[in-house]
Length: 150
Image (cartoon, rainbow, N blue to C red; front, side, top):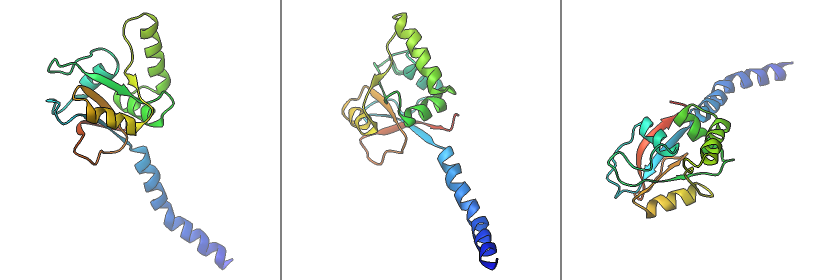
């Protein structure tokens, strides 16, 4: 009985640490990135919505923007659009299906993964993309950080 009580006490003591890990995972961030030569220094959330939801193909200064996206089944993509628009991935996919069906616009160019997205943005001053982790190199500049739906 003493051992069971000790194990229970140990589990209770570890519970806050476990909740902190779950909590930090729930507070994911998405980093909107551009090439360092891009004159854009910062982007508002509305400007990012306009770029990634096909409402514009230009940065706020008028330069052409080439937006990239992760695969439809990517958890990072789901987190990004939830944080950016407040919509789930099913709603975003439905939005794009309607726009493509009517021929209004095309979605951002899909890339296979975040490594490919980072590499494309590193090579193209007109590119814009997003990552689920803060980039650790100077080949990318963060212009917006989105935190759990805000």
